[in-house]
Image (cartoon, rainbow, N blue to C red; front, top):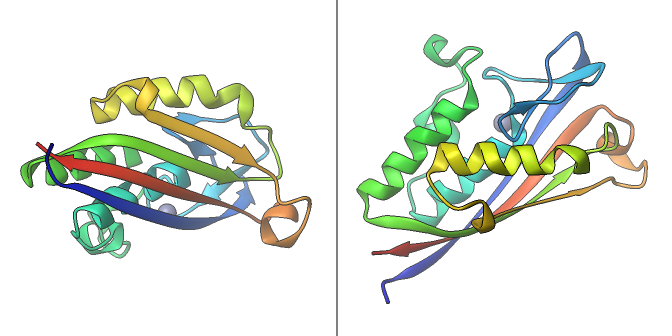
Length: 160
Ligand SMILES: [Zn+2]
């Protein structure tokens, strides 16, 4: 067996009316959407950060600067594809990914199968190796007040 490494990611985006809500690679119907330089897909961003961290390749902002016009409004799936290339260049393959989305509204659970399908395709891994969990924060804090969305990700990568 090759070398196994663990990575971790955390990210937050503000939620505002008048923005599309991209989450886990799909558009979730809601009156508010996440605000950011890219499409602000918080779930993809934490997966990218966890993968980069596991391979000790800095973070998403280091590779895709949020002041660089070429990334303005970019589909985060493109960033995730690039990150997969980076870690595979280092000889790593993904073992499994475990994520948690913290969001008061809308309900995330009905969208999880579609997110898993989408992310598995983008990353070139099995759906069974991607776990997506969702929680509210019991109406507490910025998530509870529906001012923002946050997410966490743990990932295991293995050198082939
Ligand atoms: Zn982000």
